[in-house]
Picture 1 (cartoon, rainbow over the protein chains, first blue to last red):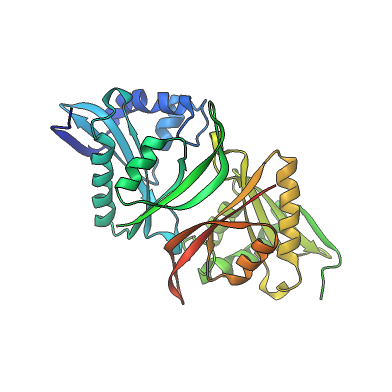
Picture 2 (spheres, rainbow over the protein chains, first blue to last red):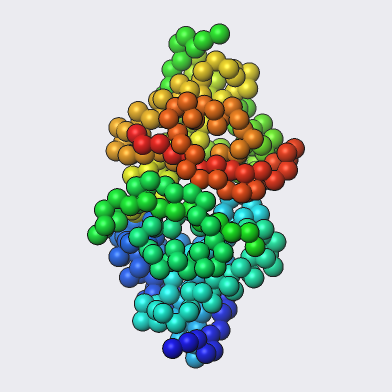
Length: 165
Length: 165
């Protein structure tokens, strides 16, 4: 199945419940994001909707299937490099939603004057994500040895991925 | 000259003035830290003494010559990797103070259960720092192309450096 009418728009207050339903299971699983697995739902939403970032949702017929945030990766002399995080509802996996959000994020980042995008911590066992980022022009510019304790796979590497915009 | 009697201890409230005198010029110069150059003195101290980190000072005869912070680099599955930032008073440069602080930080990090240490953003033109970190066992595990806009050198790479503890 392909994406037919995916709308990507800024997150709104009334999206909180839908966002929680997508984000909380991902954080609880602890396999892809370096965040405390026992963060409260409020803390997860505070992080994802933080004042230091812009948060978007991808909706199909009003139903939210994915979300991402966009922010500066560093301040000062590093503030021309963007950083994003993306999560897709597992029920909508395989439909190109992450790819569509990523392409939206590149455009949004360019419009805001960013010159490059960096992912600081791509868990190496998250092969689907690694493959997607490579196919979208990201290079593995760094490898952090055993930097992630995966709840199933144990200590695994994390990747730093980077692309110009 | 070598360091004869350097005491490294946790920063205290009464160190704020001395810390500001060391930190503010470094942030204003904007050549080594990816922080806004126009941060207020209060904002710089709030960052350096933030609740998410432990901050230490290196003092000689009661005079503060350097400072560093120690924190988790990531949360959750990444929380076994430490991160530090170090600044030495330029007037005390060349006396091994940064090296002494670094060695102290490795021990402090080990005592707190950290297994590795990561520097996320070593500006490549900061050759003295790069040389010091290499000599202390850090490997360049990543290179971020043109990720730093240096006020004099223009767009330069930043390095990701890493060592086990």
